[in-house]
Image (cartoon, rainbow, N blue to C red; front, side, top):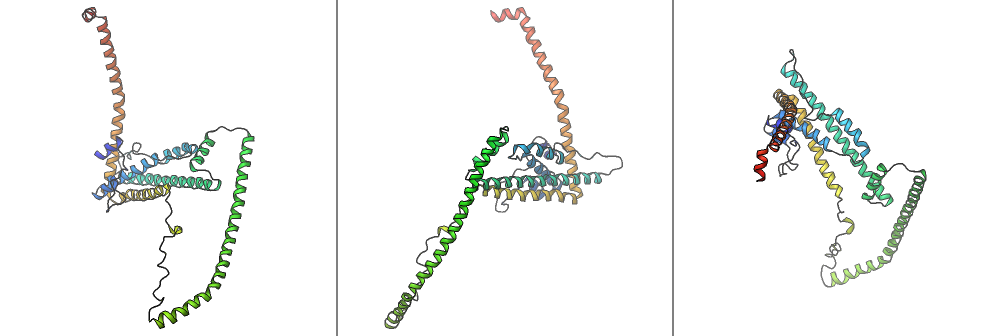
Length: 337
């Protein structure tokens, strides 16, 4: 009953605990309930977290928000909208709880699928903006402003559109020709480097042969030493190669890591809801939670109108009392003396 009341009052079912070595991805209220043996509460909290996360996600494209919200409202029900299956004379409690659990699985599956769809759309939009940035040399913020201005700006004459298209075509053609030229030049430089390296190695072969003979005759045979056998050329330069230095991480990499962790938690929450059907006690507990939430919602709706009427009545009484005091001559004479 406490869980149902808290959720009906607006408590967040997807809050996370602090990460620990045992649980690096943190723990949700659903995980805590499952670890304590409350399978029905765990499934209820998991379904609530999926639906609340779906409603909290916002798309970048303002034109698609209306259609997206309509599809969500038709397919997914939140905790405040769900109702328990009405009981008939012939239905048993186990059958009713099984129907509620199957409805919860459908609802959670729909919410998880739409969350994954939103994530894919956001990553696709990010990829498109990044490619647009790399090709035309426009910053990410400028590209976002252009997309927003295009969606909000009214349709103007065809002259501006044609001039803009011509400018884009010019930039694209210049970028394409420059890219082909840089590719050809890079290949030519590689061929020249190979030829120069081959010629340099041909010049140094006699020198290497003479150094080898000198090392064998003087250093080994004459002085009975190790010569150049202990010499290691790799140990001379241990300077790190700038080409092998780790690249600077983009801010979007952190978002991708967070999204991966969110997807893992989504799969775990969906598994909690699906595992609830296997246990009759969990199904009965889930139905009791739905009944409590529905009862608290009906109580709240029924108490709204009388409270408003009582407030209005109290306000009228206060006004009447004030008017009577103002009309009283004795009170006014005492107040001004």
